[in-house]
Amino acid sequence: MALDCTSLTKLTLVLCVAVSGCSGAHRRAIPSLSSCSGAYGRAISDFCVTKFSLDMEALDQSLWCSWSDTFQPYEELTNCTFFVALKMHCFWPNRLIDDLYIRLHQDYFHDCALTGRLLRDPPIRILGPFIGVPVLVTLLMTALVVWSGKCCQGIV
Image (tube, helix red, strand yellow):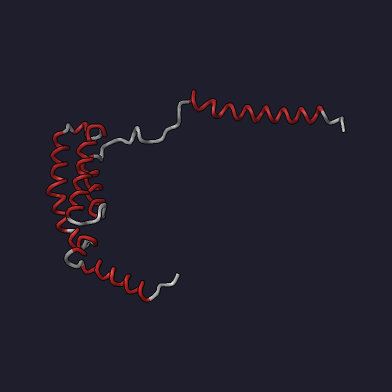
């Protein structure tokens, strides 16, 4: 599908508005990327990360790896960063949020074991029948085919 002159003009206008960060209603429709790095970073640091840090410090450090104990502060942090982005007309999630969560995971959750989340083989009492039954059926069917071939060979 070829772009006609009108479509190309509209596309150029939209890109110019997005890049320039026009004032008024256009600013609410298309967020300015430059305002979402410095001011947004300070806002989430002041409001969201500070509260999350206080909530995590209130927990015993041995409970930091327990999802049931850290779920509420983690959810509040997620909601806080989302609503600050919404109020500041920034995209969410963004690179700043990704970097924030990586840093927080390195600070608070780096010692958490992955047990319980890793895939493991089932116990042998469950795995055994799933291996043994198909092998036995295959052997039985092979023996049945060989036997029926020998039995009916003389009748043609």
